[in-house]
Length: 287
Image (cartoon, rainbow, N blue to C red; front, side, top):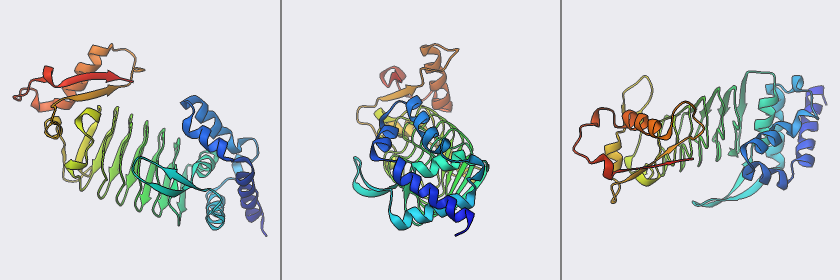
């Protein structure tokens, strides 16, 4: 067994030993600050980051897939299914000194690209929570993605050269998500900013107006034929004809009313003079 194989074996053993269910639960339910500290500390004290290269990460993935080490059951509001928890893989990628990493997967790993700041290329179909809390960089997936793609994504670019599941852009705060295919239901659920581009966008799959937030949703792809989905199209879906806008209260330099006016200006665009009573339509909330 060569040095690289021994290192990969050591990492797999660390994952089996130091990544218990309690840690997985903590990473999913704790505050953002606690989550990031846990995430960052998974391997940083036990490995030399300089050694964690793309080839090592790929060997770890293959061994974990063979062993089904991180296989667990995930129950969402949509379904119950087995998942492969990719948080350790994301931690290794962030710890690596390489700025560009390419991996190939045979199982739908979840949480790939968590807190990502690098250029990551993934060959294969990925699981839920792709780009979870992504900070920057770019992720390109050569395949499909499952539910909650771009969950709480803050910045960067997320490209899926395939289709995505439900709840695309859930709580999206910033950055750009591009789907070169179709997306499932509840697109843009409570997004607080950023952009969502879907080549084959079905308007019926947008979240209900009372669940929408501030951000931009496009039919088409950047640099090709596209159109911005206007707020008036979204309002047609709502029997109540009202909508919530969600704002990030941490934004400095503007009070609540100023942020609300800015959002309306951006979203209504050329429809400001349309025959629609804005005062009867808009309710404001912020998080």
